Amino acid sequence: MCWQWLFWLIEQQDPQAINQLIHNNLTSSILVLRELVSRYRDQKVNVVVVMSTAALAGKAHESTYCAVKWAVKGLIESLRLELKGSPMKLIAAYPGGMATDFWSTSGKDIDTSSFMTADEAALMLKNALLATQHGYISDLTINRS
Image (cartoon, rainbow, N blue to C red; front, side):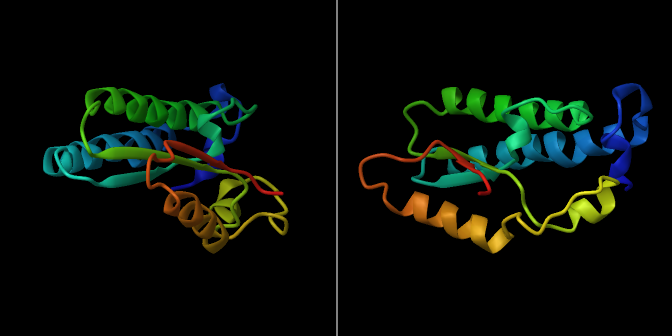
């Protein structure tokens, strides 16, 4: 999959890449969460869904990418309402500026030297989730410095 087609003006984006993006992000999230809820609705389980800060704010040349991330965010918010009163909790994590292989295939010329690693983001998420004796973190935005 060539992700660079998703970082252009919308009229220049490849329809096949758009469909793959929707499948990889939204459809897969729906199917995985459907299965998790059917198995664990009545159990004290925390499910962490890692998205992107693209789910929180629009970005030029990333309209489709942001739209799909917003759709997953809407899915989480709606499922939380369905799970009201259930011990199962859905936690949304929004990391931004991750140093991953994604950027080398995105077609964008991005300097990722100041981006956080996946290990750094995971540690921040873990630390935020540990101190939850009488509550829980529902949404966590992890920004790079």
